[in-house]
Length: 397
Image (cartoon, rainbow, N blue to C red):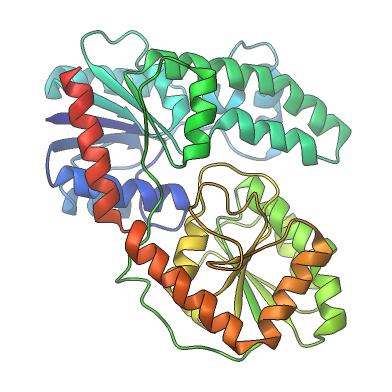
């Protein structure tokens, strides 16, 4: 089958959850089909070369994305108030991308177009005779609803509430338009079905590279590690929530506790968290595994989110116990006190971490059961096979 993927960027380096998922699944799809990858980026870049080596035939569109800060950014936000489409859609549109898509369609004659993020469905609404698949890494309307719930700034909450109905309307349109949708969890599948009851939906969960994240030996430190892209708002909220609401409780029971936040592109408000004793913010790193190996406990204190958490799968694969909020563990087939520990409230979250510090046997039991779970359910080969079957089904519809 000839497949054309549309995306915001080339999924390399694999230092975000979305990039990791896209690269591992689509690289395996490219081994079975003729796959072309159209995304913002530059020919000859590291990402372009990585996709070329993976036989994914990248096509680069010169980046024209608006900045994410500064006066121009706020002008774009203001202008979007007068648009019927949400900012996450308008900010990713360019006539150049549309022209390159038209050229690619003419040259490749794809049988299937994969929109590797929901906003990219805006480019396929006038393409006839080509099957389309929308990849919902999250249910965006759920994300924005939670943004509004936890936003403390009155102005930001006002703006988010203006975006929410536009996000919901666009997401519904994108799902209705597509021949198929993939989601990363059964819960997201139910949410997608409510938005678009007649859609053909397939659950393709997130996974983990079991060889790359090999089991590490135990540690007796009092070090906590959080991994995740720090330029993503839900991770920023999780970090500040942990530092101000949970970490002080832990310091009372364990004065030498340390927490390390590992993830790319932290804004200044996140970097400033390191001014608190016991807190480290690394910024972008080449490899998260050394930090996971040093951890006694990995944390996922998310209050906003969707999809499912690669950070949990990676921690389990490497043999580290996890304490998560219920939101943080959404989308994964995990059981409290069997695969990880769950805690919604700050006091309980801190107590759960302290419990792991105090009991080696509990840490080891959770580490073993977590690794066993990812081996049985979350390997990329198994998940890619499910995606391949769904793509073939769409072609034959």
